[in-house]
Length: 406
Image (tube, rainbow, N blue to C red; front, side, top):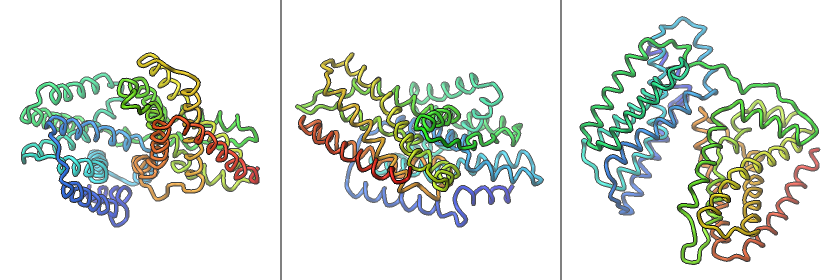
């Protein structure tokens, strides 16, 4: 078991466990910076427990569905191994990676913003560990046709956190869930956590942008995680108008459009598939064609969420006119062009898991730019025409950059 943990740890944390060191340093710096700034807030303990649970469930689920480490697992399967030791080692390393590299930053913010008792901090940590183990058990249940049981299990945990809200009850539910998950995983097969890399398909290059667009649609449908993220943004688009509106002369409609640009999996397709990127860059005449189709693909995905947002805005606030429609198209196309340029010129390298890729700081660059543009447009209506002119110039530059590659 020790050798399996060591081999998996080097895969996820790096050869010298540098990811853990960097995350710990970042968490300490963040805690000290926020605490020294004397930002304080009153936060209910159940919010800490709920965040520790849901955040870890989301990250752990991404890790379990990741494809990058499947090759390492397949290589380890070729060697003799104890089934139970492998399962527990795999869940332990994935859970440790989730807590160390992702959740530690969230905890540092919570601990710096508010004062907590020792018991509250202890329960939050237990909730985080419980979420990792229970998610692994729920993942196996889903593959065994017991998804309904895992959903009921999760609903029971959330009910205790949201309805009871007492640290003793939450701690009891977490401990019982950990014991149940460990007992369930004791009978798991290591191959239950392995899935063939469905994303590695033959790249079909074509001279028509429509062919690239069709390929990307199929790629999206084959990767359910990407599709879930897009559907989630569409769901968020339905509720954003309830939060935004006219506020002291500031039109917050563009603000919602900038938030809907945060579709990380779609905007990092090439960073997430180095083989596809290499094929596109090597084969003559494919770079320009692909990136044009890629831009159209992101624009379409952004537009779908934005149109839902527009319809919801009309239902909640009304007053939709051609200015709103023009703003929607400008923001959708602008964010698509910027995302494609980043993937083309500055692809993300050196990531270990899909979770690392999707939580890379670069993901916030395009939404930040669009957020600044939204603030500009929201405070001064003629600014929309300036953005439209800038977008036209940018489209010409993008066309010039891709044309020599055709």
